[in-house]
Image 1 (tube, one colour):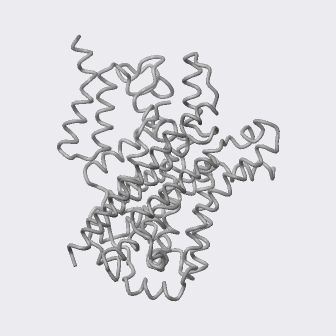
Image 2: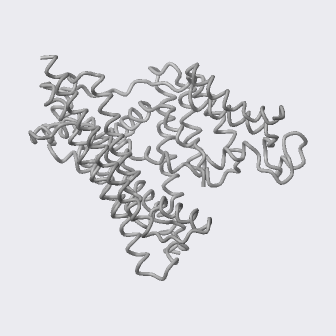
Image 3: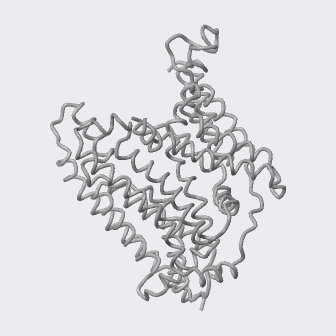
Length: 197
Length: 251
């Protein structure tokens, strides 16, 4: 029982679900963002993407396919736009930088460290146990293990960032949405590419 | 050539026209995919579940275009997984991450935009040799390498803050950062025998009847990776030279 919970938590699916929840958070904030001229269509876009992340492994492929077409429609008609993020001024950033100093690197460095660490740990363990055992248990290979590491790294970095800055989690999400919207619909171009394998 | 065969090529026309009209890339590509699929006689949906035996929309034993799209998107979710790192990076930026990165790089008088790219590309090649994949764009380039590069540009252009660096230079720095990441990652990953790229080549070559081993493939990847490092270094050295001239002109 304990083992299966740990395996489930360390699976690619759990990382997808976490990412989807973050996207749902962005969607709710976008729906409420009156500075965004296309807030309903923008919010729907992130809501759908979040849904594909959370439920993608369980939905029939044709449902996901139709959801993707809906996203293509929204993005293709310019429905994904930017809003207001209560951004900090340059002076505030400089002031914070002086106060926090090099400590601000810690959460950001945790992302590659956790990614790297998880991938290395996965490789080390798979050498120690009988060949194929770990793959069978976790359904992960070295590449996927690094992706799970990236997901965990993102979560660990969020916690560390909140701890260091003493700021609140809505600000954390707002800042995430700022970066996400800066990329906008471009984000999912990469998803539409079909791999030739 | 039959008309039906020509119709299958209509996707290429759609891509050319759509991109020429500057429509959204995703819209153009997906439309082209749908049209090509329909022209080739593929069904829209797989013949299963509620679509079973629906005429026109399905064909027995063939995967539908919509199903294919859903499957590919679902399997490719890993490409967009970096979204989960955005909140932490965003909050760190609010609290001065870019200032600190720029301040750090300004302490090294020898640091320039180009030299930073060369060092980063070598670092990524080294990662490749160690067989570790890092998702460099979200975990290194955006939060660390990009602000460091802007910090180095500040020194070159004698600017006192990131705002004073010319905007076109900042855009070029983004491209240069992504280039060094891509060169290092793409060529570096073939230097380790356990990476998917090498395993793919091994699979194809053995399938074609060639006797190759992963180590022989890695051996042949070494000169290619070396060239990529040399060419990258030349490109980034030229970038530095151009910035030095540009800075001299503007003074």
